Image 1 (cartoon, rainbow, N blue to C red):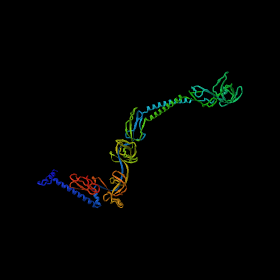
Image 2 (spheres, one colour):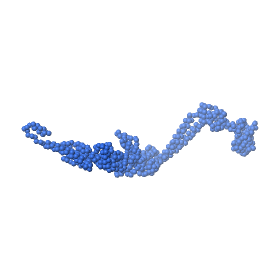
Image 3 (tube, rainbow, N blue to C red):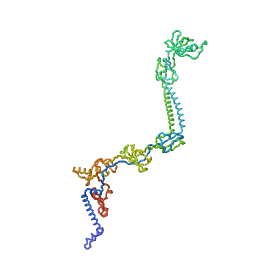
Image 4 (cartoon, rainbow, N blue to C red):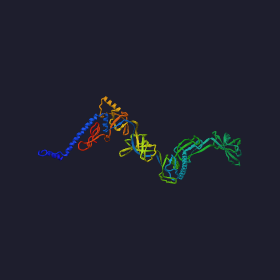
Length: 587
């Protein structure tokens, strides 16, 4: 730069000699010519591209950032990928609820057991003692309850015999004590005559025989029935040996107690006269203490034996009965618990499975405190795993979806699983919520609980459907189709017929709208718009698609249609960019 300044200042002096051009001046002229040549070459390339036939135009496109593919059929699957840890179908840590010496433990680690198989037998001496004590307590509680119930039943004062209530000395509200006389009743409809017969004659008399009774004084004759013949001899005054015979007869109404009479049975006359008594003449007595709350039979009313005459009330007896009832229930529960405890001395397998760990053996003693886990059993009939699925993906997952499982520990093997449960209870961490999804794997050869595996959940899948690369679908669901393809020809003809503009499609291609289906990220299903065999083009990455360029003057590159031109940074033109349809670009 200093040289150029120096030259301009010397030009003002006519005496000074003209400056000599320096090397930098020549270099700048060369750059100028390089730029002019580059512009000319680019212009020629654009003209050449326009004159190329279709197949040469396609070659020019291939040398740019476009890629080509034919619409074809393939299986396509949309899936989500997550990782998890395998777990057994079921697991159980067996524990003991009782203490004592282990008598038997007939199994070993690795054994496959059925549900209910014997695991441990524990000494039951302590349990049997508890049962015996509980049975004694229950018996005592039952006796106390029965006594309390009987006392409560005594609050109903009943007739000791059938008869007429002659007197009743209490009324509602009166307090009575146990053993207190409350009134009396009498059955005067039947009279009873107890009369002596000679012992020898009495042997011929039996209960049920008919007797003829003669009432002294009135000489009234009654028909009666022998109800009892005494089996013991008695000696009357004068040394007479007799046996008493009891006869009952209907009272015609005029016979009073203590009236004397004689009787003849089977033609045999009595030894001497006897006296009548009423069949029933009883005192009404309270069996329990309480307050009279109601009177059922008034004086003069007839009651049958056992019929209620009056009712008492006693809070003390009611409370005593309730307490006895509670004690009885507690005693019954204690016995049931003791018997259930006896079942706990025989420990069986709660599930069908494989013994993974055995911690106690025969001869070991289980203390009164918790002994921990006696053994561990896994159900390995199938395996499960739980995936924590992101909230953005959970709506795509459904029960029954197929899952592909792979494990680093089992190389080259793929397993199939199925979604069996989706929890709605999410867990939030770091602002992200995940939901547990349970997977079941039935074919598990080579897999073990605890292994870390990868799972691909199939969201959607389709077999042998028309597909194109996902990158071939542009905004508006458009695909660039060659006009040499049947679909492209039809689309171009429809375009020309309608008079629509060709749009931004490059020469030899036309945009076709399509309907999309399943996508796996790389390819996407075409439901309508294209046909199998159609040739399509789409923009690939510039780094990978660019090819067929040539180098000029140490760093210049030029592509064909839609291609790129790269100029090494330095003196002259900076790197630039160009889009589909030609132009210059840098990368």
